[in-house]
Amino acid sequence: MPVLMHLISVGSALYYARAVDPTLLPALDDIANSQAKPTQDTLHKSNQLLDSLSTYPNAIIRYHASDVILAPLSPFAKIVDVENVGFLGDVR
Picture 1: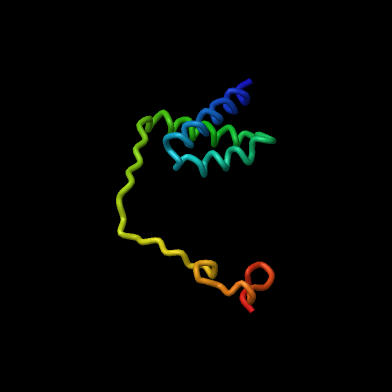
Picture 2 (picture 1 turned 45 degrees about the horizontal axis):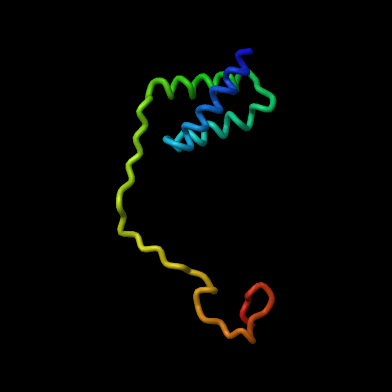
């Protein structure tokens, strides 16, 4: 029965990670990959995750503005002569 409780707890942590704190997702991915055949190591990892969540309950993520300008670097960004376009958009 404790394994079932940990599965439910990890599911709740996944919901929390998606909504509030995405830094938990790598740890949850590691636990989820081993949940098909849980071992004592899986139980230990999920305990560590739940301990971490209870130790740091107020997650804060700060986003800062940046001066980065995104520019498309694609061959489709330029004007292509329709008659000279081959298969999958390569220019002949």
